[in-house]
Image 1 (cartoon, rainbow, N blue to C red):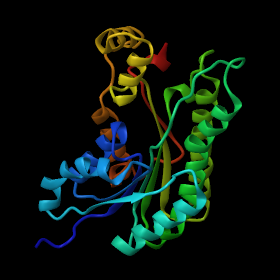
Image 2: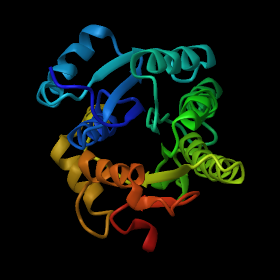
Image 3: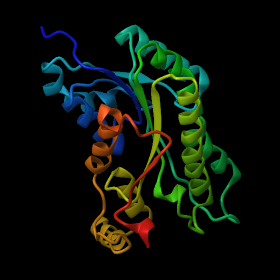
Length: 261
């Protein structure tokens, strides 16, 4: 049997969409993975099969089930990583949701849930993971925000505000780590529309064909196409690597040019 190889990454929301794309790209680079989230174990089993080729090369993959927005669960997930791998070099806070409603129609419970998952999860995740990461520095924290954290819309105040919070929280964490010479960097990533299961649900909710929705979204992007999970994953691989060692407290826009308009 091959000996365990590579550094260790903890990815929330790592079993679907952008998170799964990140996990696969990191596995291809030899990273060992802990995937955190609330999906049922039977659902995760099918995802785990997709890592078989990587595991044959010595890449370990485990699933840590828990509520990423709950401080107790985040502590337990980090302890599971410590027990399984003994180290942690990369934290990817990817889990997130959007909620419907403008400022007049958005339900306050939905607002609070959006902030709990999009922002509180990063607060708890970084606070609980930093002690383990600093024991095994250098390290990197990558927080998945959104271009909606930089550019507002009248139809999604909760999502706009929560993703903007991720942007500023990432900068504060970066400065804290730098000031205390932890050798841990923190950056945020800001994608625009990406072809994930979320768009399938969006098309269904609006009773339109997925292709029609994709065309509509693409027309809003200067590059005229919707992103793929790998487009985001490639950026995370860079931010996890030594090639980005001089980059911290930065926001990486992956928006096909939207923010340039």
